[in-house]
Image (tube, rainbow over all chains, first blue to last red; front, side):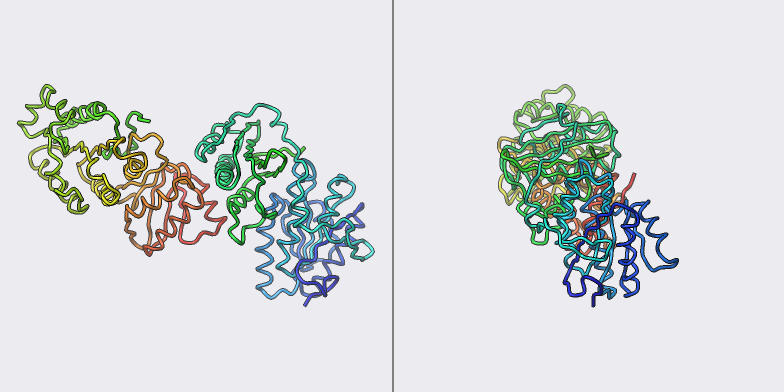
Length: 319
Length: 277
């Protein structure tokens, strides 16, 4: 039994909210949350600190809305998908007919790391479709760049508006199509320098040693270990499933280590690869998913030379 | 390919591969000197008691005297291993245990052997049995004053057989060997795994574990991984499955935190990672 706009909808009802004032945000969010509470539906807020405070102050005291730490939820896209899917599964198991969530991607992600958040916004149309979820993703148009808003319109089937309507997005693009488009990735400035290590056809062991070589203590030890795991998996994938020439490059920055693994192939066939755990044992899918779980930024690039995956440990370049 | 001998704390069981008999003779000579200095009994075991290594040892000053007082001998291979050269691992360990006891009874501090064992692993079936024996004798060495250098002629055996043998030793001169499975003193668990475990040696690791034939106690299979630099999710799953088939949970003791995060992330059943200093 579902209430509100998705009453007749199966699966995930995914909306974006574009607002240019706090009042506009509250005009959409407050009725959305109160409607959930009134219907007895599990209702959550996963906003940043300022907006969460704003929404909290607009709700009646003692209102049964759960507040999730937005910054933690939105640290890495694949982690967000994992934790949300777990939350949703728990709620459904507990008998929920619908779950409502209002969330926002932090504005720090609107720069050079937006690519993987855009992929997130697209992939979740599929990833959360197993659940009776009604969610809204809030974007403050005063601080969201136009290119980000264009992706928001392509990755959300509809918009919720302050006057209570649910308007289809004219440029909505289903994830299977959106995720197969590969806009150019913003280069990390480190990449304009010579790499610390460059290896052709490395073994996985040589690739791991290359990451250790770039470790000058600038990144927490656990993050270095996780990058070693990631690079090992991605080089193994390239050697097994990609095409020659396989090449590894590793750069060392003051606060990060960046590694790229390229091969002459086309990269993973499954467009959700990395963001979602593989369901059908797709080649290399588990290694890529582990990489997305543990690196602070992962990009895909496909061009005439082949496929390149870039991984960052430490503070990702945000542009 | 040949590097100087590297000890890893359990240096009393060494896999020494050689191309040139002279390098084995150098090695045997070093061990003879160390053995005599430590008051041990020393055996050079060879299928050809007149080989170049034996000749080198016999020509050394003091070797004849050491032989007279029972401190150093060249032993023909057939007299220590069964005559058809397909060994019975348990019987062979028992034979060395009694030889060690005899050395102690004769006033020596222990027994050290350098054994040219290439003939004993010359077919896949013999190699399989002998690698199982290598782990059993390794376990015996953790608690007894017995030490061994197992010498193998690389050109005769080939890289693959050499790697399968070397990975069952705590110490080896095989330089490109990526992992090892070896015995530990009983208080440290059921075995140690060392080096790096990934897709490239997954099958070889599986084989090594099967040959080690580890026996869990109290429903746990405890693996000491202090020298394990890396293992991937496949190796973790393999360890969990191996322990499960033996009715136990795998317990990996490692100073590194990444394996614990992987087990947690993948919700891998049947394995627990204990991060130890």
